[in-house]
Length: 480
Ligand code: PMP
View 1 (cartoon, rainbow, N blue to C red):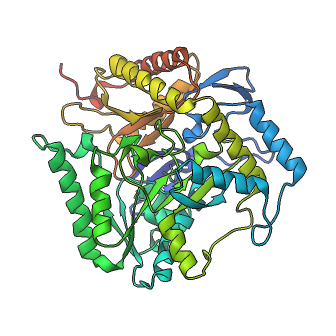
View 2: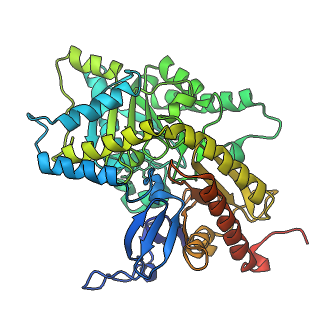
View 3: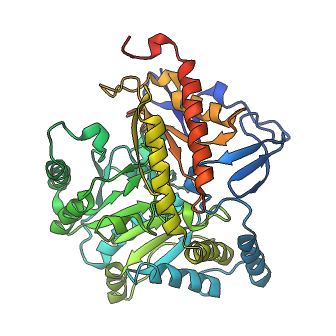
């Protein structure tokens, strides 16, 4: 049975029947008092540090899964939350409204120069993607093209854990037990990962053109007028570790979508809201999405915030039919969530943090490359802004990944978290099941300073050496 460590989900085993199960010994039952031996008790946090019950301070180099974009303990945000709670904490969205929802929506529209005309504020990234997919479908109902029921998505992608979002994603382990429940009409094309896929001698233009042809062939296979949307992350997050799209890739993919009348749905739940140095990652791609999902960095972890964003094209079709999006859940447009997220966004703007993401991101990239690129097990260092992934490989020449049984990325994460390093890193195992190598993700807060970047990279390099030093010769493929 193949064992795969999966960030946030413990380890799983693929059984001979092909069904994945969580590995029992990795998840002992939670005690009646709520104690879970796998989870470290955090009692506080300030700035870049988490404070543990045992007195240790952990340097947070990942903000969870790229969530804590302003770090921990920002009083201005808790003040905004308290102020909204004490004004009005909840109204149903169907027929009542709040100023905080209006302000948040207006901010999201203005900050995209009016490209997004409407935002539905939700809680998790999965909900936002679930809604984004439904909105793409309903758009074609409004347009009188009800035959558009299919989607094209990519391998090595992750779009969330609920059934619709999971159907879009190519994360095989997380899909595992639910495969038979997922949408049949999702066609899949390969990811865009230059390190793994660009052929030697292939020019940049040839690589992009090959990718566009893969998409076009999939449109033709599905039946071009049956496809509602192409769904993708501009910079792939959890599935393969901060893999940015290739220059020109999204322009070429959008041209194919336009040719066949399909929408572009972007999932910026992890890479969006400033993480890559622009508010939206697509600003660096020369394309605009028709529909977009955002999450994590929207509320910075202070409250669960995400959103479905719709461009003018979608809203015009809705209004032309005098229709409404057939969607919504009890806590949608929650006023306190909106107040928290708006304050997070105002701080990012006021403190000019996007430019800090760009400059500190360049510094992080430089230090990672200087200190780690020549390491015998570091295969690739890739990312954008403050969103960096390091892929570990058994053989740098052939790019052969480590045996998944070694759980190398998990070892790096666990070593980093322990004494003397005391640092939190995010980790993953390729796209578990399509394993392309272990990856570690570094995603500090947007207000990070150069000295903290230096500490992160120094600790990380020491952790890699530590883990490397404990590998057996048979696990490695090194020149003598
Ligand atoms: N899309 C992407 C790109 C993500 O990275 C994630 C979470 N890692 C999701 C969707 C799902 O978000 P959530 O876990 O908040 O439901």
